[in-house]
Image (cartoon, rainbow, N blue to C red; front, side, top):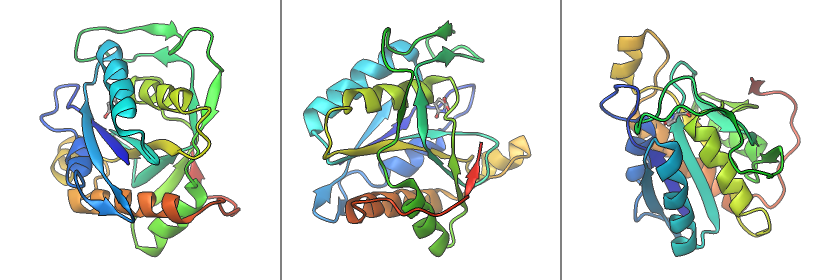
Length: 210
Ligand code: PCA
């Protein structure tokens, strides 16, 4: 299975998403070995690297992970949209505004992870989490959209996107919520296990923030 994280961006020294993901590189979850890949926080370079990783691993479960500074807890992203509207330049200095991720692609894709069952499992483990209906319009949403597009005909692959909050030190510096690295890693493991063990998502109301 494939897990991706992102390189640091916006002047930060580390990106909590890669810190959390890389801990699982090589680990067995169920019958599957985790391959962890760090994607650049660049609109142009991130997609070829994602596509290469998908070709190489042909994953059963594929989860891209990114930082959502300011959010509290784990965000289980539900919707990827075919829109880029970069608030700040990426690490290569590019700042595309109001363009499509993939020209002519569907307006949006839904994650195929069981997000509600994952929410329940995270809550049972005492990890703060919520369902999110927007992964933003920056590099994370681009990668999420391209991931779901690439796998759109692969019914047997569960895929989606998870945003993690700041690490505790960064959280203090920004005056915003944080989460310890090991808790974020544990959350990812729980989400992967839930994807492997849940053929149909549960229907429970609520649990969402925008
Ligand atoms: N977060 C940014 C891009 C990379 C990352 O970790 C985002 O939410 O788009």
